[in-house]
Amino acid sequence: MKKYIISGYLLLFLLTGCTAKKNVSAEAVIRGTVADADVETVFLEDRVDREYVIIDSAAVTDGAFVMQTALGYAQRLFLKSDKAGPRFPYFLSPGEQSVHLDFDSPVNSRIEGSEAHVLFEDFNAGVAEIDRELKSVQKKMEKASMSRDQAAADSLEKVYISVKEKEPALVLSWASEHAASPVASYVMDRNAYFFDYDEILPFYQKLDEKQKQNRYALTLKKYLDVLKTVQVGEIVPDITLPDPGGNLFTLSDIRGQYTLLDFWASWCGPCRTANPDVVRLYKQFRKKGFRIVGISLDRDHDAWLEAMQQDGLTWVHVSDLKGWNSQAVEVYGVRSIPHTLLLDPEGRIVARNLNGKALRDKVAELYGEN
Image 1 (cartoon, one colour):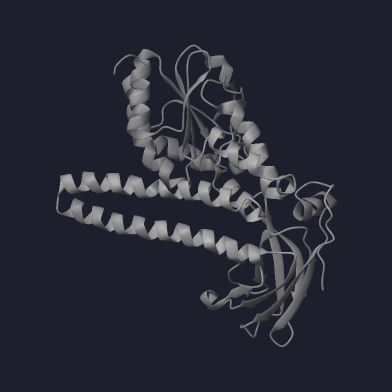
Image 2 (cartoon, rainbow, N blue to C red; image 1 turned 180 degrees about the vertical axis):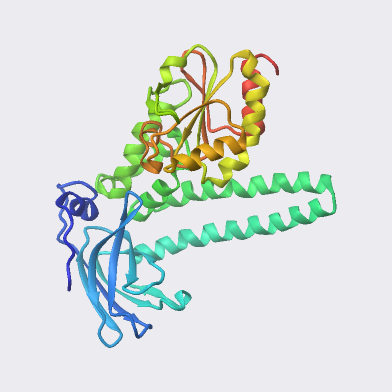
């Protein structure tokens, strides 16, 4: 079994969830078969800070391999080959499990013996059912649009919204029911962008001390701590970031007017789709003093500038060009974009994550136009 050398801190994070208090002597044994004759090595990977990290590997002999790796509790890891092909995400558990990997026909791949993965598949099945419902409604909406049946289209839009709301409801109920498994912490952390602080906190409080030490619960707790500082009624945390010309801009310097913090990126399709609404909002209220600060999660300076010009975004823009590693992501707890924070003249948050008509109506209310 070939081992890959990684930093001591990273290894501790991968195996214990950043805590030295837990016993990491538990071991996962993976007995695998590989359908692809040309595969010589199978790698076990983790994903840390949006990057894949190799943590173990095993040679393939006569289409089979055995891998033994320290694993203190069930974790979502990835198996891939030394050839081009997909990564297979599995929830691996301490103890023995078997896998069959088919890199040419991924649908034939499977894992057996991991209770955590069975749980994960149960959750995924619920999400898949909601996705099927959404696609069915979308087809009906398209048909209504083509036939110019506005009444049917309006009715179906309400149905679509109703079905869409099933996914966060599933996350909350499923995670709460399975809180004794690290899979629940993973599911809640992965989908935390759906929720506000008061919705996540009851789940976290339900975890026992053991589960609070798994890596997903630790990340969720860190997110909760940040989220608490950016709730409605809180003074928004200050931040200093460079504008496109490299000049430093500090948010607190522009207090005195209602201000929208608009988190976006040039590569974000939903952000670009939403931009015309934001432009209209700015044009409608700028003479009243309304301000927008665009905070981009771009990495490419030129792409950032081009998107601003193409979409007609004429307000203040800042970015440290670090993508999801931006200081803004950490300070404001941004998990998905587009994302917005609406501030009053004192810098107090009056609304979170509004867009489209809901955002326009809120701004109009603040200016007494409703």
